[in-house]
Length: 420
Image (cartoon, rainbow, N blue to C red; front, side, top):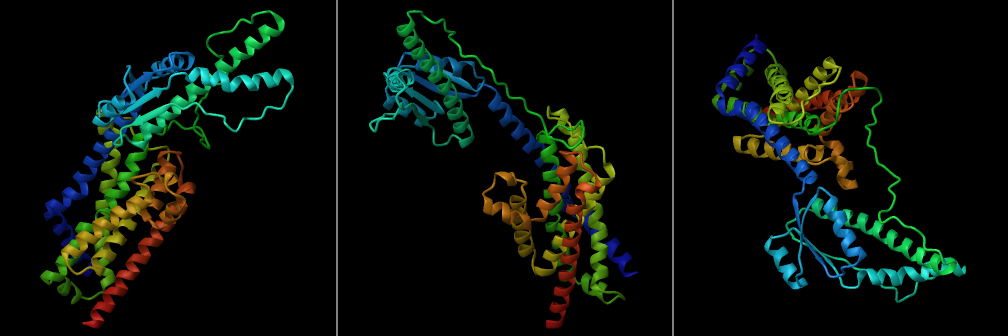
């Protein structure tokens, strides 16, 4: 009877809480659409000619012209070739007219020739080549806008390094050909473009054949599903505090049963909520995201394992909400502590930033986040087409977390009543 009364009360309170329902359902849907679109746009911008570069070639020799040709062939840059002083170039980049300025100093190619020639000569004479102490490296100056993200800067520098290495090889071969001509009297025929004998082919390492292709949708749907589930801490904890303030909690406790019965009824109601969130997020990935030009969500070939993962994640989120609602005493406490703690756990769990790209110490700390456990299980299904065997570890720790949080909630409530 106590369970039934508490269950009906929780359901009515939830249905009457329109702002709470918006937080639970509308906000996650909006976030997953917006974040996925932003990420996809960023990826597409990297593929297109989106980065404005000011190119100043004071060398006007093999390196300067070949480097420009290589950059022009790329789909990453819009290149403006100009003859400006370094001071003027720095001014334009600082004003934001260009993201990057590349300055090739005068005599750069000649300097490379002088550096390489002794090495080539040592090959023909049989002497050991020793780099001189006064050896001067060729310097190409890159001026960057301080507001330019490191991703773009590293992309540009990496491209420049790749093209420069090819050009250095061309210069080396030309000097080698000159030496051979001097020795044999025969001028070797050389191609202007070096032979590209290596091709990179990317394949995904799946344990078995699958039609799943990793993309922004496959990553974002599970990440924001976990985030949405754990955000029930705000309405759940708020309802628990409201019960204590309006006396309904006291009336429930006068009925036969225990505090655990009350928590069980709350768990049942909010498990319906989290599973509904889970289904909605899947539908967003399958129906809405493709409609706005994003990849469709592939749920894999183990729907029952996926449902089991959704239930376990929902239970973990509910357990956390029950604990916060038991510990806190005011709406302000539950709102601030609940929202901030979820954001911290999401950051640690890899929702905002991939765990593998975090510093080593943060990777170690991330293991404490239940969002990390849930996300790992979802990734096994969404990205690797895993089944029950692959998610059993994640499901186990999530359920243990739920049991522990409920146990602590009951214990803390008993301590609070004892001290009154």
